[in-house]
Amino acid sequence: MKIGLVSCSKAKKDYICSAREMYSESNTFRLSLEYLEKTCDKIFILSAKHGLLDLEDTIQPYDETLVEKPVAERRKWADEVILKLKEKTDLEKDQFIILAGQKYNEFLLEHIKKFQLPLEGLTMFKRVPKLKEMIKNLGNETRLIHQIVNEMPRFTWDEIDNLAFTNGIYIIFEKGESYYDLDRIVRVGTHKADGRLKARLKDHYLRKNKDGSIFRKNIGLALLNKDQDPYLRIWKLNTSKPKIKKEYKEELNLEYKKKIEERVSNYLREKTSFTCFEVSSNEERLRIEEGMIALLNNSKYFKSSDKWLGNYHPDQEIRESNLWNKQGLSGQALDLEELWYIGKGQGVKNISNNSCDLNFPKPGKNSLNKNEKDEEKKISTKDIEKFIKDIFIESKGSEYVDILSKDIHKSMGLKSRYPMVCGAMYNLQKEISRSDILHKTSSGQSSTLKIRYYL
Image 1 (cartoon, rainbow, N blue to C red):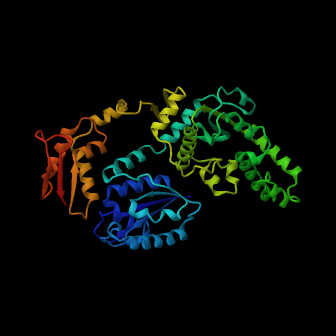
Image 2 (image 1 turned 180 degrees about the horizontal axis):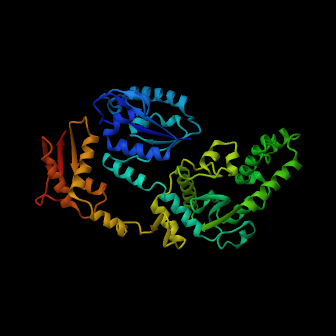
């Protein structure tokens, strides 16, 4: 299960209401909640005053923050939050997406096994643009990686030796499994030792030994669990170890094990196919493997069919991730730039279908494609003013906030728009009862214009 944790905000309503509504004054909170509602099964709020809150809990306005509390109080607060989380979630198995500042998660993480911190290290100026980007790209990366691998050459179990390279990533597809109009990825894998790509695939398809292939083992676990076969208990064991062989000698039933191995082989050969792409560096292979697994696992729209065999797997991670993978589920997902490199490496220039047109702009300083440039042209001074006003709202409760034109320009992803940014900053001085210009050049329209707005 995916659990979302979002921190409270300084900006609040001034009346009794639900926690969801109380913090909705904050742009960061609203965007965080929007993202979590599209990616998580359950969502809780981390409140400096109340600890752990459900979205619909009714609360009164308050003025309290963890930032001002001493370490001992923050640790006590975290302990109380963890106690509540234990009642509502599984800290060992559930996957947590935490959209909160460092003071809110510092003593929680040691109790949570699987977590992601998408906003880690980002300043207040960068959180809103990052959240908007995350929301905008929801589902796009998942569709994009499916489009890329669906265009690549497809192989069956008896064509492993036809591969033209020996280092890379392999992607498994399964009959009956689709992602919209594309064949759905059901497993991502690679190899650590150089030159073992073909050997790794043969471990899965040709060598009938579940202790040499976690993929085979997982297929067998699902088949046995589906049949409610008591041999499931033995299949889970690593019977290649002498100690296990000796301890379970009378229960091993090697003849029956061979039958299950044959059944697994038949399933893999009849139901699955694969594609591969070359990656020479071991470090890069492991990064792409983890990134693809995390990307798919993070997508709320990445689902199996009701008939998928993995739905019968005894482990929750397999059932809920919709993948024959358990490692890497909580890793750092691939971003669009990494997908660009994969797509370009496979010769993909443009991918289109009814719901998605994706071009691959070269990443870097000049990476804006035509659509993005058109969007930038539409930015007005009013848009910049609204962006800065959102920062005022985020800073509610503080005496003042300092705005640097360079930060606004960068956070909004603008190109050579300093006169417009500075103009917006000057306009806002008229709406604020008091402000001081802390730094200004002779032109008054540079990247170093800094104004202090008293709230």
